[in-house]
Every structure is written in structure tokens, then in C-alpha cells.
Length: 489
Image: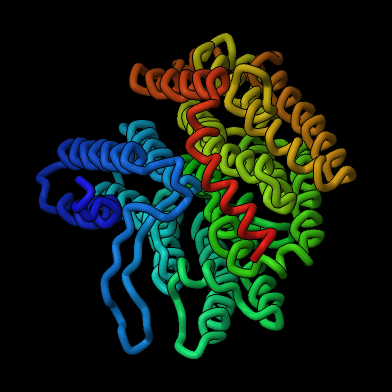
């Protein structure tokens, strides 16, 4: 099993299998084939996690092949305790998205929808596995194409094409400083060095670290997103399909880039500029929460809520403590279930009633009790309630943050209070308030396959919340190594 190029298979399976869908005769066969491919992908990612030795902080399952030898660019893949768990969580989210959109996609060209969704899964896996900075950047940029067409063709809003174009243009703009920073780092050596393992083993000269760090923070900050580079997310949440909004909010590639590349590649600069990351985190927490309070649409509320929550993750990384790092990884994994699940439930509401504006909603708990129950559970998990997966994640983050920044810790606690205010206020009005329209009374609850999905996600939230030990044990050694490298590099 160890000789099998498992990571390459994980990346290639959804990319190549998606092309086979075009040979299938009808939509039903395409749907089932896409689901089978996604389930096989989930099984492969679980195998990768089982193979990884969590007590070993080094990169494992490494693959290395010469690609562009004249430029010293190689095809390098590998995972460690900080990245391996993102693989099955991403694969799980894709399975959930496929099932959630089971009866929703008919035209235009449903086969193209599933092909693009699987392609997005494949290149996202590449981002998590790449250990060559050029390869990392290629996978990073390739995520743009599937998102553009998925939002443009299957969006629910009248301005979906504008939202898709805005997203791509902002991401391309962010890619400029990102690529420049990666090239600048590589050129600090006698021979250009693009191996992430080598770059982490030999820190950059201090005179170039600051510039590299700032460029990478800007590049990753667009996708995190940081204020004021966040405007694409509310637009995409409103105009795009809920399944793609679930993918974009459930998988925080920008925050992962800070964790994997920006901070460890320029550790001394990160230590000196810790206040910058902490400040961006605090602004994100408070800005996202306060703007969420003033929204009148569930989609936009969840988008700004996501901005607030990822601000706490950035604050945890800025603390450069083991608790903050483990909490950040835990919370990023938690986003997959919480943010992804909430957007999928809101998508089901939109399909049934054609709106997610609060002025048109009310009393949904009477006609959709299952959806109302699980929306409440997911919301409470996002607030860090005990017995949910949000509780250990948020507590670790707060411990790490307060140990490094007392004032920022108070801001994070204030963000939690604001989070409770906007979520409970919206829940009261949309699910428990007076029913303004007769159509809400006859709206069907979740279908069987939709209910199974929320039962699965809700069960995972509770199990991980009650027993967080396996996740913490898996990430502990890699988190210690990451913090040690940042403080000594």
C-alpha cells in the first residue's frame, strides 16, 4: 500500500473520472457515476489518513518526480498531521453536495455540472498535497475555472455572471502577489528552490522574509478573505448555487495557505509582524459579526458570519502557540460541517420557497421541523456550544489567543457574543416567528436523502464535540513541530 502513489490517485481520480461522465447515456447514470466516484475518493482519503503516522511530524506519503529540471521544479506531493485530515473532510463535503443537489440540476448540461464539481475536488486536493510551490500555485489557480462556470451557469441570482467574474478577477489579482512572493522566495538561493520541504528547512534571509511574508499574506488574504478583500464572498453566496457557497465557505484555502506556506516560510518576519495578522483577525471577527447583524437575507448573514469565524482562525495562527494552531486546524475542519451544512440547508429552503429573505420567511419550524432542528444544531456548533465540535475548537483558539494577546482575546469573546446575537435573532424570526405566507405552511420538509445527510453531519458534530481526542492526537505532533519551527526559524 505504501508503494502506491496514493496522493496522485486522490488528485487524479476526480479530475480524470469526470471526463468519463460524458460517455454515459443519460442524466441518471451521470448522477450515480459522479456519486460513486466521490465515494471512492472518500475511501482513498480515509486510507491516506489511516496510513499517516500522526506521531511523526514530517511529511509522509511523499511522491517526487522530475518535472521541469531546468527550473528545478518537481512534482512533489506529501501530507502531515496538519494537512491530512483536510482530504477526507473535503471528499465528504463533495459527497454531501452531490446528494444535496441530486434532483436540482437538469440544465444547462448537467454532465458539465458534475464534471466541474469533480474537477474542483481534484484541484483542491492538489492544494492540500502539493509540496512544490509552483505546483501549489498551479492547483491554487486551477480552482478558479470550475467555480466560475458553476456560479455562472447554475447560480440562483440575476447577477450570477457578474458575481462569478468578480470572484475570478479578485482571485487573479491576489494571485499576482502570491506568485511574486513564491518566486522571490525561490530566487534567494544560488539555484532556484521551489521545494516547500527545502524552503522550510532553510529559512530565507531576513532581509527578504518581510517582503515575501507580506506578499503571501496579501495573496492568501484575498481568498481567506480579509477585510477589505472580502466582497466576493457575499456576492457569491447570494448569486451562486448554495452547493458552491457551501464549498467556498466550508473549505478555507486562504487560511490553509497562511498555515502551510506564508507563516512557516518566513517565520522571523511572521514573528515580527504578528500584530498584523492579529489585527486582521480582530477586524475580521468584529466586522463580519456586526455586518451580519444588519443583514436581511440568510445567505448574506452566513457569508459575513463566515468572515467573522475565519478571523478567529487567523487570530489563532497569529498567536503562534500549540493550542492556537491546533484550534485553527480544528476550526477549519469544523467549517466543512458547519458552514457547508448551513448553506446546504438554506439552499433547500430556497428551492422550496424561492427566497431566503427574512421578510418572506417565518414559522418554518412548523412545516420543516427536521430542517429547523438541524439548522439550530449547526448554528449552535458555530457558536462553540458544549457537546458540539465547535466547543473544543473555539476553546483551543481562545486559550492560544489569550495567552498571546489579552486585548484580542477580549475582542474574540465579543465576537462570540455578537455571533449569538445574529444567529439566534435570525433563527427566531425565520423558524419560530409568525408565518407571513400561506405557502410556508405547506412547504415540504427534508426528503429522505437530505435528512440522512443532515443526520450524518449532525452526528459527526456531536461525536467530535464529545470525543475531540482523536483529532487533537492526530494534529499534536505536527502542531508542536510547526510552532517550534516558527519560533526558532
